[in-house]
Amino acid sequence: QVQLVESGGGVVQAGGSLRLSCAASGRTFSSGTMGWFRQAPGKEGELIATITWSGGNPYYADSVKGRFTISRDNAKNTVYLQMNSLKAEDTAVYYCAADNSGSGTYAYWGQGTQVTVSS
Image 1: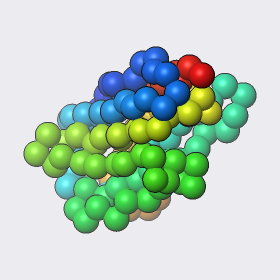
Image 2: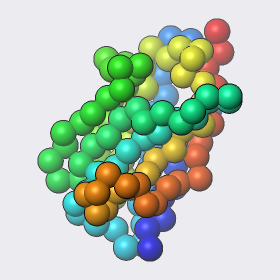
Image 3: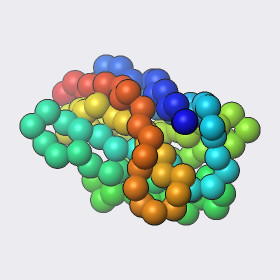
């Protein structure tokens, strides 16, 4: 079993920055993919960034490309999402998730952390 705990959310003004963290514990792994998703009220969930534990290969949704950066610290079993130039439309609950099978299915999810960007 893998546990994921997000932190770092909060309220920030438009144009500001936040860094989210996702700490993995339990039966952690050295392969597979970690992803950040978000869900805004009344909208579908959106995959915004992914990174593999071994090789990086970051992916970004167009909505965040150039503003968000995903990174990992394998020694700490932690994945980060640095969010810069935040916009009101970035307001959402942000979740990290783990695909440790390489199948594209995210089997493990964190509890989510709220990010609110005030305009």
